[in-house]
Amino acid sequence: MAKQTAGEEAQKETGRVEAFSDGVFGIAITLLILEIKIPQPAEVLGKMSLAVALARQWPAYISYLTSFLTILIMWINHHRLFRHIRKTDDNFLLANGLLLMAVTIVPFPTAVLSLWSQTPDANMAAKLYTGSLVAIAVLFNVVWRYASGDSRLLTAGHDRKEVEAITRQYRFGPLLYLSTFALSFVSVVASIGMCMGLAIYFAIPSRKAVCVTD
Image 1 (cartoon, rainbow, N blue to C red):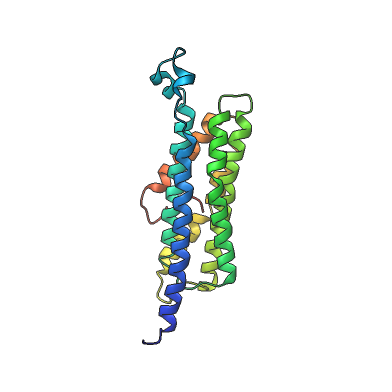
Image 2: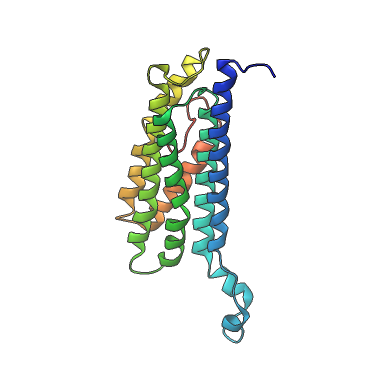
């Protein structure tokens, strides 16, 4: 068997990291649907129709949609980063691991938000939800800035303009999500609406807008 070159070995290592990360994103996004409960006949019959029972779960649907879109765009942008990253080291693995840990937390604040959105503590639920997105945005920054700093872990022939564009865009991600956190003190609807708007905005392919949680 031919001996692997340094480039092939590095690509194998980043491939393992990306495959593991894809699995974590996949699990996190799948867990979201578990928070949408099936109305039980014993709890519904004689009180309301199935249609009404389903309609009353609208906060769970909105939470699911917002979180699904957000995690989906996180995954897309994580994949985009690995178009430029071709090496790893222990610090990078740790940073990426912390990012994935934050991603797996998303189903929890999503569930809290769907259950508490129509109660007096709705603002607290929104703070928890948007706060988790702020943390993810910061960790995305840590991962990218460590990898791209001095081209530490990037491919030798990487597109410098695209790398610079990603770096510029990442600069504003935490601030945008921090705005949703601040807004949660005033209006739950506006805060979550802004989260959904950010997910949709960053989903639009653009050289200037390449990351949702940066």
